[in-house]
Length: 148
Image (cartoon, rainbow, N blue to C red; front, side):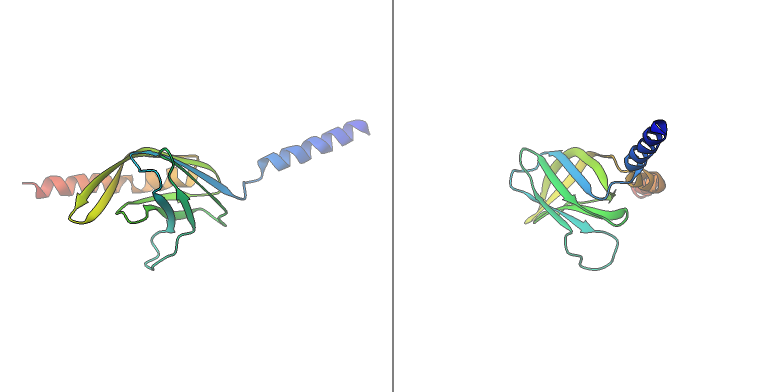
């Protein structure tokens, strides 16, 4: 009887450990971003003027978003007032994004490019990157063709 309770307790612990997280924590570490920059998480590919679902402030190149998603979602990471759009898939769990933000200006607009951006902790983002990898090759071929 005592062994049955231990077995049942072990099963309950195992079941609890296997449940999917119900919230996300996105930790960003992007060198080159000025302290005080407001970062936004905005739904992507909706063809609408979406409102941000999250906001965070950069401090020492780092920022943190926390929230909940009912399912994995394609989002744009944006910097308020700057031309920075980085699309990635976010899902509930511990996710990090690292890279280098490089600023350039075009007239009165500041544009920010993310170099060496890497998202970890999101299986959905890894699958997304695998599915769009062919597009990068097409872009390179297009550029080579039109440089002649």
